[in-house]
Length: 216
Image (cartoon, rainbow, N blue to C red; front, side):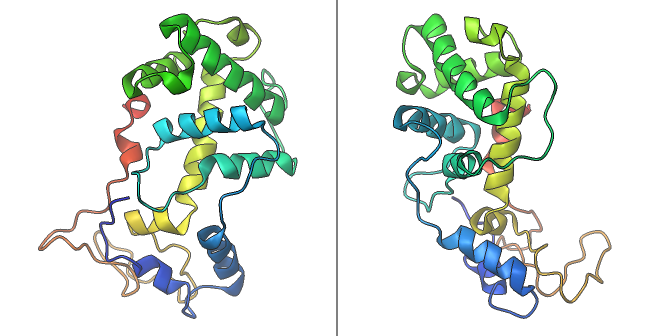
């Protein structure tokens, strides 16, 4: 994960009185939580979900990994939801299990291999076909492919950017709101906001998600 601001800048705020205790505890829990074994998905389903999430939001090997698939598994294992769903979609757990089946089915029909054995470009093609609702496979006759992709991408993005490490990459310090915000003009920064490490530059972080083909 490329850090565009001094490493630890955002994490350092968690130890200050500029963050409420409730917010601090939530973010520290996310920061220190170890990877968990799946409780909702089978081992095979979970590995497939991890592979898909890594194409949606690539994370560089060797960096501390944000456990996107684990966050989805945790929510489903606790039967949590937003309290609503599209009327064309089954319950969240069923949606994910059907969707994972559909991803592998499409991969087999397009490339005659499981999704995990495909190249990065082939995996992206499978996912883009699902996003555009043109993916082959009987699964998508029972589950709207485009809506499944939308729901998965939204949840993956939410989990990723609610994590302190991702917030540090983009210089987000919105959790430090105890002092309130006074400098709200264009390009104005509060003292607690991290400055760009690029000499003379004001460019903010560039998360790799923005370069994903499904967002172009």
